[in-house]
Amino acid sequence: MGIFVRLKQLFEAKVDKSLDRAEDPGEMLDFSLRKMEDALQRIVQNTVQLTTSKKRVEMQRDEQIQMATNYQKHAEKALALGQEDLAREALNRKAEAEERIQELENQLSEMDHQLTATINNQEELKHKISNFRSKKEELKAVYNASQVQLKVKEMMTSVGSEADEVGKTIERAESKIYDMQARVKAIDELTEQGVISEAFDSKTDDMERRFRKLSKDSKVEEELTLLRKKLASNN
Image (cartoon, rainbow, N blue to C red; front, side, top):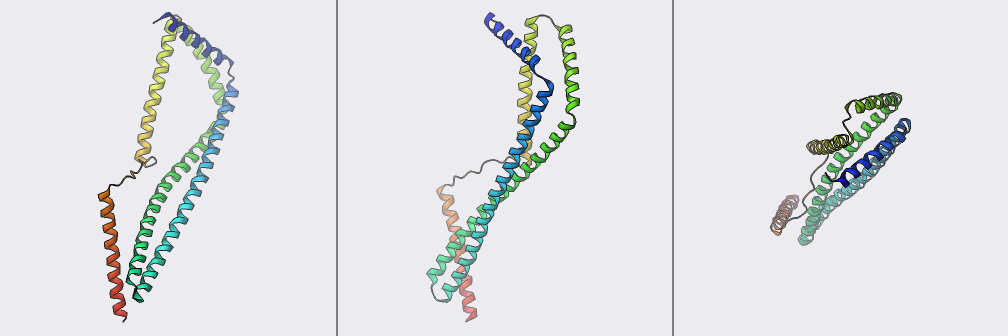
């Protein structure tokens, strides 16, 4: 290990110790509580925004449902008047509206998952804040006791400044590794629960589009045939 690296680590260690001595446990706990309360407020705002977005999508879906109903009526009326081309166009418009309805339903399903996860996070954070408030004085006492224990351990296990710095380096490395492992597990768990979903692939090749159009045209023709039979039976 180079002399400059060792001096840099020693300097950083001294700064960390100075900061530790300057920190007041009571102020730290109060600050932590405020941060948690701020986070809760942001989650509440996100819940409101997500709910508002969901309502907008529901309104769009209901509008498309009404349009599909109207196009069905227009098709029946046009065919009754002998305007088959107009009836076919109305049924095409109806099919497009039904496709849009399905897209909006998928969006609403995803929003429901997101909203459920957000509300769960909100309730969990409320519970943590409640526990934090009730244990505030206890945590202060634990902090003071831990400080004493740490000083004793440092005096008993000290084998020189270099060994101490190596130990702290290992501790920081382990902490980062554990944080990364915990994050990976958290993402896997949220993915299994459906809270995090993979992005939908919006790319559709030309052949798939043609198949979709063929399917839609076939559906329109089937409905047109049914309308003809209905009209013939009425006459």
